[in-house]
Length: 248
Image 1 (tube, rainbow, N blue to C red):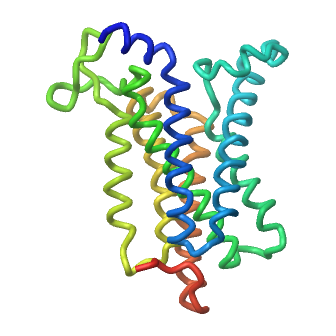
Image 2: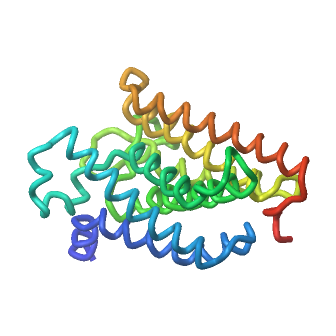
């Protein structure tokens, strides 16, 4: 059993990537039904945005940290080396902007597609967080028992931060997916909450408040902007006939 676990841990990032891919494939059709958008287009967006996220996040990380390694394809595909998730998120937003290039401003259709992208990013975040078990990387801030757990290679007890984030995202989803909100509002608000949770848990909790920097501040701004879009979606739906309500 220990040999099997060691095999999984050494390939944890790739196992996580497979789990994320499986989740997006599974959820694509369901998101399309809930948002009443074409299933094939939602699937294409998930696929194209997923690839774009990984490539942009990985290349940007290497460009900043190890620029010489960009010429080595074996280093490029070694995902254990790190990613810049903010760049990946911005790349996904660019994909949505291209997909809705015929729209003007925050139209109802553009907001609906941004909500689909937010759903994909939240599903990715949740699945990757849960997959910390496969990477043996559920480490968080130091915390006493019962909040903290003894983890491999550490003498102190730590909070399982990724699992806490995944749990809070589930709670937020349960609260937001209600008949009082349109699906566009719900998914955008959930995306904003996910961005703010990343700051509160991944940065402030794991690295400490002193380590909060430019990327963390950018996630705060992104989260607040997306929450603002959720409010804008509410005004648009109120003023016009809703295109993407809950399918209940």
